[in-house]
Image 1 (cartoon, rainbow, N blue to C red):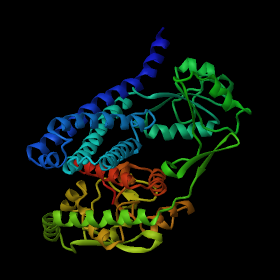
Image 2: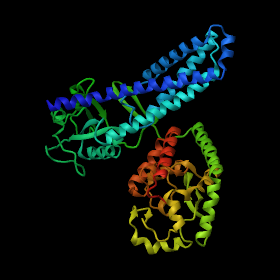
Image 3: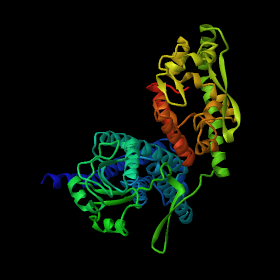
Image 4: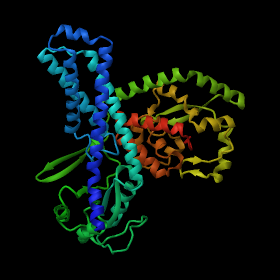
Length: 487
């Protein structure tokens, strides 16, 4: 009875969450569309359109707004923006909301042109961006609620891993890093599994060998089976597993050991009944490079203008607090391995580099490549304050304007660090280093070297403009709740 109740609750949370999104989407669209209409009519601008086309009246606009809300809701449904496959993590949910909205308004514009109905342009031009902005904000707020639930073990798929011990352990670690993705591992089946054993380095119980998948599903109340490798599985075993799953309630996931590859680089192509997965090598089109550079120049130039009083105040504070230059210039490695001089406000005593060797044995943070100390004696009092809020990095806006850095990108390394790189780590030089990046919002100095590299390479492999916006928002939030810094 208890197991039945757990399985029922697990299978219904997706439907309940989708209903909540539908209700809030509707409220948001009613507010955005009718609010825009009232503003536009209040300003008297719609009267011009009404006089030019007798088919439109104030009553017609009320009906038109109602139809627009219904069509907008329908577009969000058709594009599967509330699907459990896209909620909770990644940018796909937001991208689908934007695509559905822009596509709908494009269709409205075409229909208005063909039927020669002159809908007030200002009304549409305000309703579209306002609706998109509030929809994305609403979805983001729901996502924060969902992440909190998933952190408590709720609203997540219960996953049974099937494959070799090594692949099961690897996928379990990857899923454990992202509880917000909604996958909670509850057990594993391995080729030589014995019940009551644990997967090495985890608390995941082994529920038997790969022939005990159906019994393991019942024992763990799993609703998702993730196949982590097929090397040690009997022929047709994956097919047998898929046939044994309950349609609509239980799901099969193929989790290959190629990690940190996502988004548009992955394509599935069926050939003779085989679902071949194609993984493209990372590449950046001229349009992508232009969009990123345009955003860098505009945002960093605006940042310099807005923060110029703060920049001046910090420069004076550094100059008056301790002897030495205001700016700290350090040679770093950038795009395609070329060197550049990175700018920062000086936060340490003038001879900090000379003291580094004597402090090597006292490190209590960082990792095997990056030197860190929680209470570095070389840091000045003003420098400690600036580091706490990452204010010392503001001069890097000039690096961005000059083109040697980007707002978002991998961490700019020293030559001494690059000398210790494995060959595959050099892929991080395919893009410009950033003032902030996945490494900064993902843990900064608390990260191991392996995790730092993984985050940087994942960024390079899966770069997108929307992903940059997400990282910038997370960076702003982290700056308001400052912690340790990565210098």
